[in-house]
Amino acid sequence: MTDSKTDRPTDDAPQSETGNRLFGRRKGRPLRKRRTSLIEDLLPRLQIPTPKSGDSLDPASLFDTPKREVWLEVGFGMGHHLAWQARHNPDVGIVGAEPFLNGIAGLLGMIADDDLSNVRIHPDDARPLLDALPDASVGRAFVLFADPWPKRRHADRRFIGPENLPRLARVLKDGAELRLASDDMGLVRWMLEHTVKHPDFEWTARRPSDWRIRPDDWPATRYEEKAIIAGRKPVFMRFVRRPRG
Image 1 (cartoon, rainbow, N blue to C red):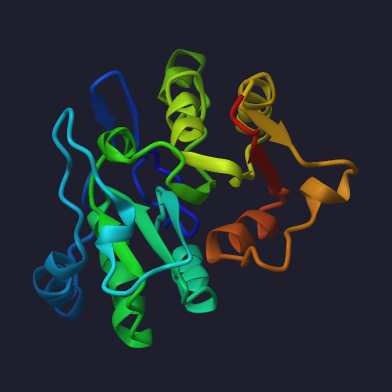
Image 2 (cartoon, helix red, strand yellow):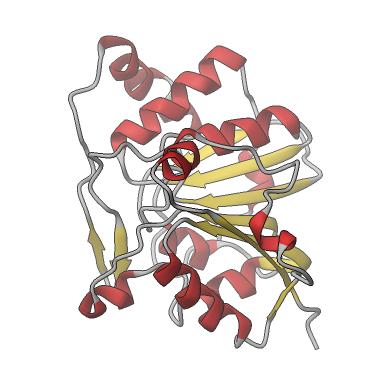
C-alpha cells in the first residue's frame, strides 16, 4: 500500500511498500470512543480480508446489490475523497485499500453518517488485493496525494512505478481511468515518467489546464487545501487504459 492520503494528517507517518515490506505506521493517535466502536462493529461488515496468494476475488460479489462498475482507491487517507465518490455514485461499488487505522476509522464515520452501502474496505496492503482481482474488473482507480518518498534511496517505495503499474493495467477495464494527484513535483515527474512510458496507459492531457484544474467530479480535500495554503500547487493527472490487443 501507499500512503496516498487525500486528507492526510500532517503528523501522519508515511505508508508505502516495496518487495514484501509495508512501510509506515498502521496506527497514529489513540482513537476516540466512537471511532473505536466503528472499528469493532462496522468494519467487520465491510472488510475485505487479505487474499492469500493464488486467491481470486470477484469484486461484484462484495456488494449486496448489483453495481454498474467497481472502482478502487489505493490509499484513501482519511476517506473524504472516497466518501464523496460513494455519495455521488450510488450505482458504483467503491473499494478502498488503506492500512492506516485512523484513516479507516475516519472513513467509517462518514459511511455511518451518510448510510453509504456501496463501500468496502481492505485495511491492508493493496498489492494482494490487486493480485486477486480478475483481469479488466475495475472501472476506475485512484492513487491520490501519495507519500512522495523524496530521498533517492527510497524512490522504489513509491506506489506508482514499475512494480504496480502492471498490476493496475491488468485489473483496469479498457478505457478505464487511472487518476493520480500530487502536490510534490518530484513525485509528479516520477509518476509521469513511469506512466507515460507504460504501453498500457495514455495520458489524456492536451493543454496545461488539463492537469492544473481539478475536474468537477474530483472533489477537493482538506489535504489539498492545506497544500495550496502552504504554497504547493497540486497536479491532477488522468490516464486511460488502452484497449487490449
